[in-house]
Image (cartoon, rainbow, N blue to C red; front, side, top):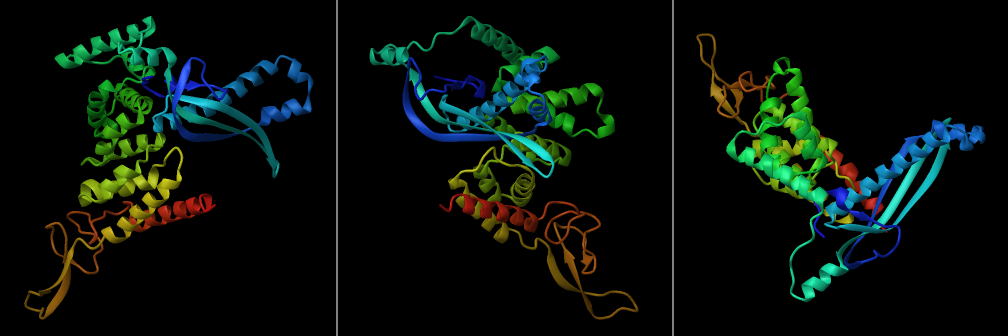
Length: 371
């Protein structure tokens, strides 16, 4: 079964899918959600509410929480290239302490790849006609085709309905155009952004959060390695909101150029996380921490120069970076470039800060997977 996004993942509470054959088991996925529970303590205080008018609103809130935790499972399933979840279990617990009450929902399921029985029969008979296309999907594809034609002709200008269409249907085909729009708008000074610009930036953010993670990363990571700091900040913020930390991409960035790779990698590592961590991430984090500890040294040159002037004699120490002017050793930042001798501006994320962050995560994962 081909799928476009997490919304296409099939979910079943049973260990099998009727009419489907499981081809591969991809492991267990789990998700946890914690929320405040004032409303649930109200139920305990007055049992009549269970049968009264408020029971419907309570039920809706429970359904919303369950839907959210299932959506998290679907996201994890897409990361494993699964198209179904079987054996779904949802547990609810109420936690009390220090005058506070929390409601915790834990969901788990097995991620699998499965094919319809009819599809397998067609393949065995040498008939590969593809999956039937429902009329709803046909409508989506036709509308998408119209927008693609406009993009091809250079006349594409999305209105709010078209933005909503792309986001609701998780269509990655327009990621390049959306990235170009976001780069242009994010680079503008805040005072130059009109209300319509802010709205379009919001659409760009929602679009990248809706399409498959891989497609979003293909555009957000290059944005985060760009030249304009405002566009970089915007891209990193979207990566953070979507929990799109990609340790493989970070490792490649750490092996690349100082300004286009290593420095942006520090910003991402300090702000962006993954939806969940696995045992294999432990070795990757250790490797990246090692790259950070060994990959950032002085980028400027310290040397002695002869002092000039009628009242001066002898020599003095100066430092210079990136072809900038000479700076006295008592001056931490270059007046022309704003960089220190290590190539960082004031307020930028430092390697030592990120190494500390990774060190804590490594300790947590070592405890988690020590057994």
